[in-house]
Length: 480
Ligand SMILES: *Cc1c(COP(=O)(O)O)cnc(C)c1O
Image (cartoon, rainbow, N blue to C red):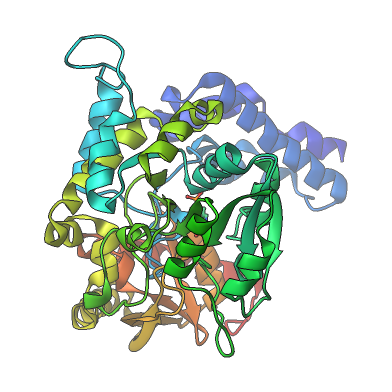
């Protein structure tokens, strides 16, 4: 064992060899590089102690260099990286939800690269309010008298409940006490806001009389929550918003709606009926509506609150508003995105999230054929490439009841397994995410740009080679 330990090269010798093999590494932060080399050899020492490494020759610098190089490169890579989304899920929370329109990207760049009038009153030169950057646009597009944006929709709900319901009760239907994934659970957010939850009705049916019977001295508001990502089918009923508004207002109570995804446009012409719009919710009588900026809206992460001016004015003065405020990048991107909505046809064309939701199935079929042709050419006999019609999802808790028609490009590797391919695609630069469907690895063109096809082909080719090597070296059955 001592012979093995002595075979380990010095850190300095490794550094010299690394830089000789890849001159770019001389630009890497030196302390980090040293640490990575030391950690690599620490792992080898563990291997030696565990009996996994028995040959001094394997430990020599020359033999170890390829692995060391790979280890160091991985260790130096930024954590935040671009990925290729071939899942077909347009608003994918794990993949950063909405991709910004070019106009919004340019606005973020403007905010990032110089000083701006973020809180400057342009008429007096004195202090202005960052809220004014998006308020007029939000009012125009939502039909609200006033509006403002905070960090995300969870923050919007927290702020509204804290301002209007702290120390009292808010009434919510049992069918709407949802968890939105991650850790957003309506009952828990209510508790943090200082609001007591008054549940009414049952999981599948809640009636107006249930709400009416629950109103007491303690009641501060009625809250309705869009049941984002689950569907109730069968024997089920909820109270129409307009009836809830009449009830709330008869008792001098405000009605709030957590709309979740919050569509500014009616997308029913695109085969997506049934999702309430922000202006529809306010027209039906809600006093405030809260929704996300980065779901169907297609903008940056934000929580938007729109509705009655006297209520919004109170929210702006709540100390939590300062803690939950949007930064300049968010406001810049949000304004640019909202400006596109002033012309709805332009919004559907320019905002990637809307464009991807609205793309017709025949266009997707054509793109799938294009992608398949390219993959057949690049991948040759290493992989069978087939086309299949299927469906994709909007994601982000929007339109849970709708499947969007799509065409998938489905891959069956010839010399490795689908699982090995999927794993290799996560290791590669840039990583590619697809979906497993009928034991094939499938790519949905809905969330890819045609300009990315060449890159997708290259990434798949490399990943297949790596997955094949893995199968060869571990004897993994190709069927596994
Ligand atoms: C997504 C969602 C939220 C949370 O919104 P974030 O912008 O992710 O904070 C809250 N409520 C509903 C109904 C949602 O769908």
